[in-house]
Length: 227
Image 1 (cartoon, one colour):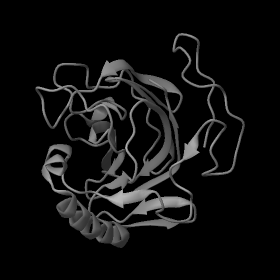
Image 2 (tube, rainbow, N blue to C red):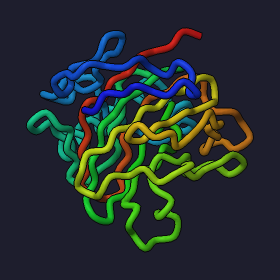
Image 3 (cartoon, helix red, strand yellow):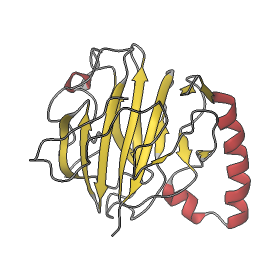
Image 4 (cartoon, helix red, strand yellow):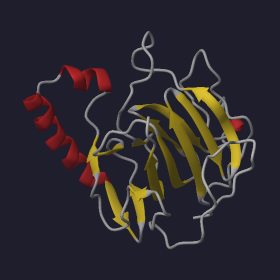
């Protein structure tokens, strides 16, 4: 994973990191993926409003079923989280509030994915060379925003099949994103896709979304920020 030194105009995002082995977190960060198995992850159960309506017993039963689906389609292989293009998104077992997140990702031709923050879509990942409307702007935008900016400031994707790196900082309802060390989202509100009349949830799981393509993730590091 490439390490970063961010320019002064983006204040206090992170200090520069020395080189380290894959899936080995830098100081102050925790690895969400250990490079070996799916520890710390769970399968997707519905959406946040639907989960909130479930009884504890209903949620527990649904989670067991979702975890089985997860294990059928997600695996750790040679230090990489690999998704086979079927099944559902992969979710952190823990909920998070304010945080800094690093994640390396790779897609194939026509790939389409994303990262949900606090269970909400999404930081967009897709093949920026597709002819589909909108993809040419590049990855990293807050795709489901309606009132606030949704597109990245610049296109910073590497060619399909190469590793890309996100740095994501979320504080309150505001999100800042760098893609491959280039600022693509600058302190933009992430809207509540599930309940448009409400602000983003204060906490929630982080999800690696699927859209029916093979996906690859590694070097997933998080630092929780005090409120």
